[in-house]
Length: 149
Image (cartoon, rainbow, N blue to C red; front, side):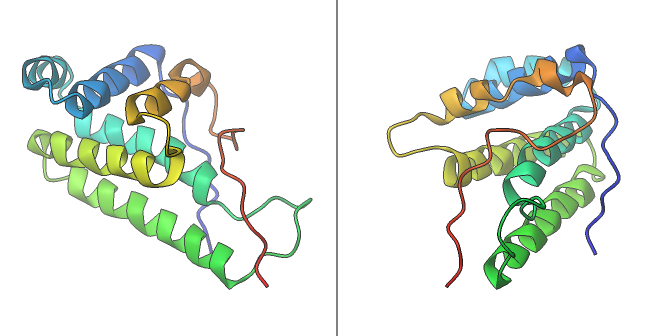
């Protein structure tokens, strides 16, 4: 059974710090990434929080108004939980894990959220961290799902 405990709100500073770091890693700006990570010793945990806020809405089971979910939707939801749990475990290893976690979040965005004609940086920018000052809810950024046959 999925964990339905809502995430605590992120402070605007925490969300901005995490996204600045993500964008620096995505741009391969080593100096900026090092500076952002150095200014925020809890960067791995912040990145897991960001990943959760991105992954959960994208992989969650459809709402009550949707058609009955099929095996594929249950598998996607389970995969999302495994991904976030793995990142959370990885973050416990310390501050040196921030870059690997950031690259995993960037790859998730590239694979699941970015259309062929879009840039990952644009996709990351479209997730509005300022909205994270309230508890996690489904967002309109969730891609459409096809129905199972």
